[in-house]
Length: 222
Image (cartoon, rainbow, N blue to C red):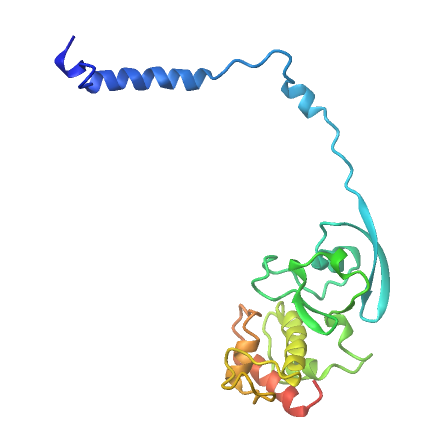
């Protein structure tokens, strides 16, 4: 026996032989058990039908009776089942805010919630903000300030701004508030930018968006 291959001092050749042997073992793998189901039986299995759940969605003052897969997000229900495509699908991960809607007056990301969780809730989308031909004050302000470019994020921006102004009126502080214990807050640019930080504009129309929200807030109608 070579001194380099002594059991107490394995050399390079011994290590290579052991590695080759173990590699062959894993390559061959264990023999299949007798009676085990083969690939053909698995491919012939019939998938179970996904049960649909009936629910009523109250959207923009109208009730919609639908039957949905319980895994359907509110965003997909609005767009695919009800044709309310004003609510946009952006990142689909709750990071851009393009899908923002109002549920019982609170702004939420429709892509992060399941439709079945909102059976009977009051849901408002961008289509429900105007009163007939009369635009919501925030919609008018966005047009007057040219607060959009491509417009894809605009429905979410406006719905989020509606919810945000309601939070200000309710006395909710933000990270930009100087006194979080106060019940009234001056809606300056820093407050608006912080409170609207969950809504992204890839065209970077932020200065005009902030100006539009300030206009609507100063008018006291939004």
